[in-house]
Amino acid sequence: MLRKLGRGGRTISGRLVRAPRKGSVIVIEFSDGMHEYVTTPVRRVLKLAPGEIFYIETMNSRYRLEVHTRELALDDVMGGSSNT
Image (cartoon, rainbow, N blue to C red; front, top):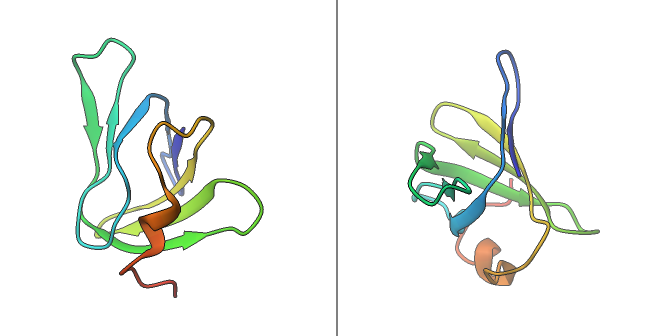
């Protein structure tokens, strides 16, 4: 689940296609399998220690990403990204 933070925030539920990495976009595929939500390129990724919760800053927005099932290995998400 990806939740946009701030004014006009919305929640996007679906399958995480591309893990959040600095410089790349985040892609969430909707359950219909035909549509996607794509963010602007990621600036920073911050992972909270307990659980699979990430705070992500993109070029234009801030998001809270909550991973409920681990289809995609996100342990390497922090590799090469800025934590501050």
